[in-house]
Length: 247
Image (cartoon, rainbow, N blue to C red):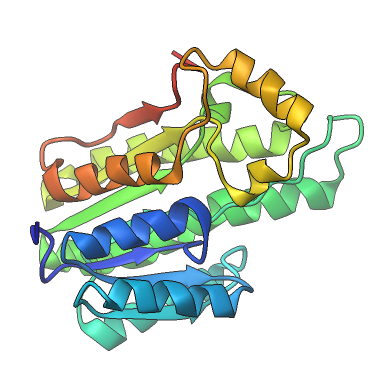
């Protein structure tokens, strides 16, 4: 289907994992897709090639989104290149897991600046464009940890919970401009990060999931594409794609 043909999308943190799958599925539906990466240029270049194989445009832009000027510049560069931005997917995120008694100020600030600060910066910059267009689809990737909490993840949980609250507020403010703002909350998903977890711990995690397996990145991506392509009357919502780990 080419129902996003002519649309321009940005996906942050898209050189691998969930972000890569989101970018590819948007391209398969016809969108031109700009991807952001922080340090893995060779992987980002491969994603660009995969996107362009769908007959659409792509480019990769390096930016450390924990720095607000860099996050804002990402938006401006894509707009300067292609003249519009229709879809923004805020996927970039990091973890620095420690219990509160071991958590440092740097651990806190690095995670909050990357996961939450970047969402504020990219959204505040892209809104100027989308309001002029009278059209926009913003999808923020949060986590079930932002709803339920998780041991050793106070910084991560705070950042992801903040995204949920931010999403709802922005949706209220932007609805009159035909800009929808929603969040996707994945559960435990089979990514490079999860692959590094020892097998015995992986089995303990799976035991917590009612569906008895990890999510797949493409399953998260399908939810994002649904909101971008079909979710015209959905805004301010948080869609859980988590196998039932949090209900």
